[in-house]
Image (tube, helix red, strand yellow):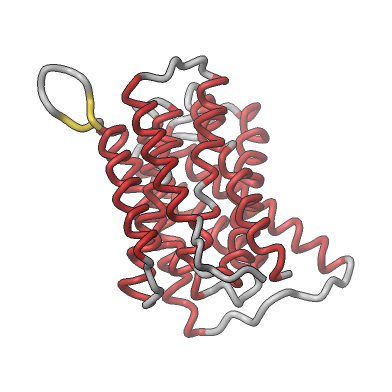
Length: 292
């Protein structure tokens, strides 16, 4: 399975990429915090159903058992996921889907920095260059036009979401030897419940029942299956390296957003896109790395 680790990381990225433009469409009928909660519930329920099918077929569980020492990381994973997706969806209410998609590359920087600070993963010179380029592009995307210099609230919320996810990726890295299926179910169900409580406390209510199946299905594909494949990739690649492969997701999502919403990219977006693409190139390539 190790030889497919990079493929699993890219597959996870592609599944997640669908979520941003489609979630933007759902915001016309679902309130933001409720949408984030339902997306995670969809992922947890979907992965739980896969677990039931595995038991029926007597498939052998993959990964080690969860122990008490894992609980702090599991709790951190749940809380950080809840906060991250809530910030992302709230950011989507005011920022364009294409900008939000591209800003998701900030997660690479956050993941690498937290991996270095807390888990002592090595950050190479190329990755430092990548972090600088991606950060610069994120600043460009966040600047609002007008007479006064200011930053877009929506963009800042997305950047905050990326910081939360960067730390959460490192919590998940510690749990990567555990069953990816169990971690995906725990993450989806409990982050969904926490998000649901947050939404109800904020005065948001459930949407029209007719839209629920579509929202839950999106959550299952974009967060359930995506998280499942991401955890498998992390097991063999580490948090920082997996995030570099995952960096294709914002570019896929940006392309989908431009097509779905027929957005005409501004010069600001094009400049940021070029800088970010260069940053991702530095992050995901290493000429001195030995190939298997």
